[in-house]
Image 1 (cartoon, helix red, strand yellow):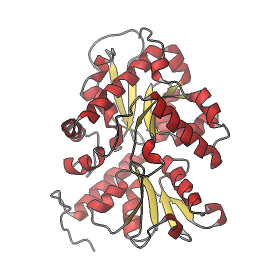
Image 2 (cartoon, helix red, strand yellow):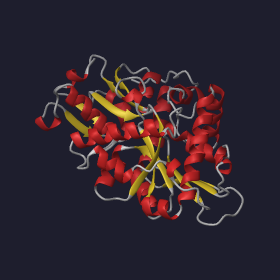
Image 3 (tube, helix red, strand yellow):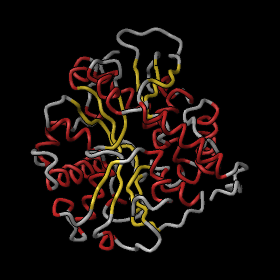
Image 4 (cartoon, helix red, strand yellow):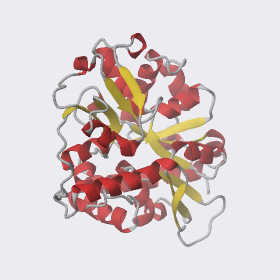
Length: 353
């Protein structure tokens, strides 16, 4: 039973979990959460608008486009940042040209592209941010036979990463070897703590919370450290094809602004701590996770040095496309997917805005 002892950051476990779950529930409910006003100035064409996912710390470089004015460095006079709490409105916003650039895990976009949705991928952003945790007595994927594994939703990066490792261990959910269930983000930590699930695969901060709250567990996977993921980018930038064709200069500058912000973030721990302070002050991460030490523990593990690296980006995109095809999620081959969807921002014409 929760005894109210502190987590080490000055708040009790009870308060920390309650606030985290409440804020997380809002984050998973969907809808626009916050809008950052555009930079002053006028330009021809649309105001360049990027969207970021509420609560995802790996999206920090997008937030720094506004906070550190890297949009101006890239030649964008008007820039707007919007924050959303679910992927469906993000993808709908891309299709309606409300949003010009979005960032996130690559699996769901690949599936949508395979179904004919006209998204293009313009850069890879970073390594790391997905982890898998299990009950303390479970030390390998093979030991999940007959067990229950939680993921955020079917079709996500965590879902297919889980499938990959289960298949590598000789376990097939279709045969009934293991049960995969979807579970809302705020419920993952309590579900493992209360032994309602045996393991889960999820974006940060779900697994780091287990350590922070001193909940016994074993780490089965950290894609920032474990092969083959540690050599590949997991999150990519995407835009809608017709907008890229109509306004390639805007998309190119948005991507350049992201890369500038990501490189700045990677340069030093001081920059990471400055970015975290901005995240907290501007409520870019409006949860009980708004503690500098906790956020730094995650942000410092992400590798942004590969942001915009076209060779690593293409290699990583190929890996995920091949995995998606092997799992039956897409019909296209990796070559077909790259030919259809891979448009490195460096290749876009530097046209006027």
